Image 1 (tube, helix red, strand yellow):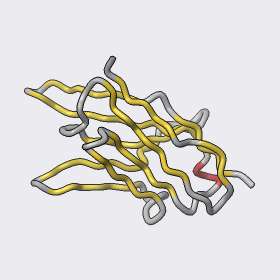
Image 2 (cartoon, helix red, strand yellow):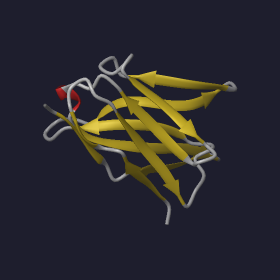
Image 3 (cartoon, rainbow, N blue to C red):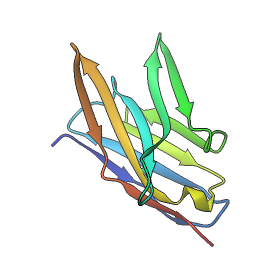
Image 4 (cartoon, helix red, strand yellow):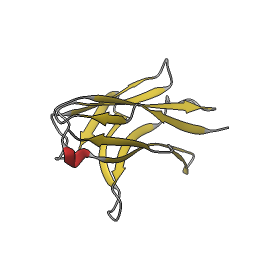
Length: 122
């Protein structure tokens, strides 16, 4: 079965850290861009960060709200993407989703994780 499986969410105090993982099953993430999104109830899904290859380089992008606190990475040997979240704030509380996308011969292949809850509270 082709899927992304997320883990690492949970309850953490303000200022704390969590690392989310996004493991691919049934396919290789090597040629995929990986993104992390979050969506609170009643709000639109927000792009948090993404990592992709471009011109032989690894390119990362971050939403202004998380830049300097979150770090996206990937381990192709483990077929897994990560989102390290530091200095967490109550506003970071929501469900986080990972996303993987690639294009082959003009055809888009993409997958979403099931979502993992992150709660920042004292």
